Image 1 (cartoon, protein in one colour):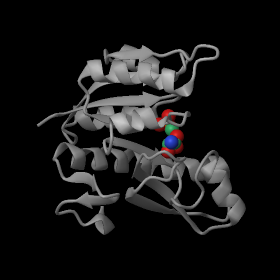
Image 2 (spheres, rainbow, N blue to C red):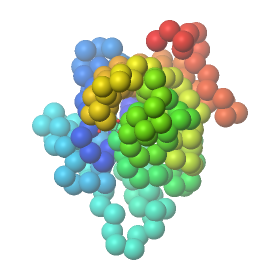
Image 3 (cartoon, rainbow, N blue to C red):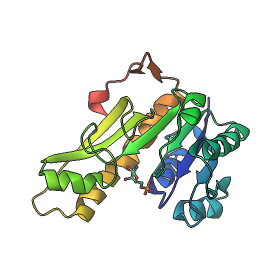
Length: 208
Ligand code: GRF
């Protein structure tokens, strides 16, 4: 059954585009019911407009609490009929009210091999630490910052001549493959979170 999803982003939206491409090519059985952004100038919103994907900008008003803002996001997503929420470069931390509402149905992608290097500038953190391998992680979202249960990871080498840009580009290429793959598991009803543990039915995650 086609999975109805909402994507939330703050910027470029290349992961959202990769998800959209995967849908168009038949690799991912999902429908993007809504793209939401907290940033009016997000290039991801432009893409949504050009491609006739339902989209909306939700403005954070001055003095509005995180919960009140998240309730507005939540109402829009509910109205779209989406059953999973996909974070793709969304730069705010979701409040418990939102997370509980979509309990066990929110995914995020992060450009590091979590639990290493959570938060901002993960690729820069990896270079500073001098690690020899980096990568990306798809995980369920909990109330922390990049702390939720891990679904899958892809690894890339860190090369001696790497800059933040070159490493980011190498990781991003993997993100664009990994995220649609994980969402397809959700579409097939294979992916779940039970008692805080990720379950992926019949899937060898070491080999994706
Ligand atoms: C990606 O690196 C993703 O891992 C992180 O934010 C970035 C978003 O990039 N969460 P894009 O907007 O999908 O191009």
